[in-house]
Image (cartoon, rainbow, N blue to C red):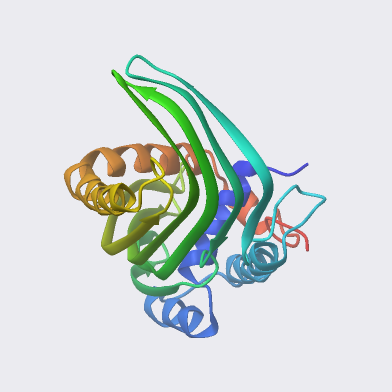
Amino acid sequence: MFNVKVFLLGLFFYIAIINASDKEILRETRGPIDDLVLSALNSVIDCLRALLREGNSTLGIPSFDPFEIRGALRIPLNLDIISGVVTVSDLTLEGIPDFNTTIASSLNILGGNVRMNVTFESIKLRSGYSLDVNFLVAKLDGEGDLSIELHNLVANIGIRASTLGPPLLRNPTFVLSLDNANIKITGFGNDDKISDIISRQLEATLMSLIIEQDKVISYYVEEIIDGLVRNITLSDITGGGGSGILNC
């Protein structure tokens, strides 16, 4: 049975050692590595690379090269200050599998620390939309296209590894940064000038949220990572002497 917790652990390692050069960095800086663990992780890397790019219908994992949702997705809103319906159509997300990593590690036979920067140079989201909502006392409507481009989105991830666990993986840290964002929305209020103003405001809001709410974002992501890895055992990583976390 597909285990989401184990899959995400594998994804964590996949991001850390996505390509051959990264594997060599890990091999050189870690020091002695148990052959069984290294073999299992290499199997997971190859497997997850295929899953991200090609998807797997049996496991219910879509392709992220690119990720697409065709048709319309209706989102009802019923909050104190806003109510109505937003419809998103023909969504395309590009750039998720295309990232670079740099790794720094200080590991020995007892464990140590692994820290990595995961850089997405460009993530692009495109979709159509329609809007019919009431915001406070104002009615907002429109229909058009939405385009979002994120440039140099960087996730700095750290984790403590120990052979003296459990837990084997602990004390995760996470910091997110973004160089800039380009957002373009058309058809808002059926007015091009208003659409341009809204586009610039959305860009400014997104950038300020990442800066001002960095501690909140870090806290929740760290809690998620900790919950996912806390009960991972060496057997989960090595497959109990078998082929590792996933079979491809």
